Image (cartoon, rainbow, N blue to C red; front, side, top):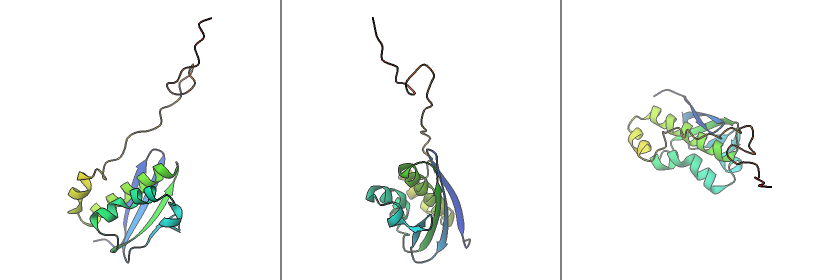
Length: 129
């Protein structure tokens, strides 16, 4: 196994780079502890789901740089980056992560606003008279 595993995960407009190193299980996001960065319990669990699912939370130190988007997109990007790093460290984990759909990049993006409309699909209010 390589000393440092470097992977990228994306979700919406967020991009996360994860660096997996053998260690004691510390997770830092943008040089802050994960508990401080993802204050919402659900977003934190979503981001760390690959580690808890594979029971590798105590074996690796994870350093994550994430930018763009909001916290929801960032937690999804972090999750994908960690899942990809875990499969790179141990190919046997691929089946477990694949069944939980943690290795699939979510293709949903915000639809662009069209001209002549209020938003992407919403129309301006129609007045008959």
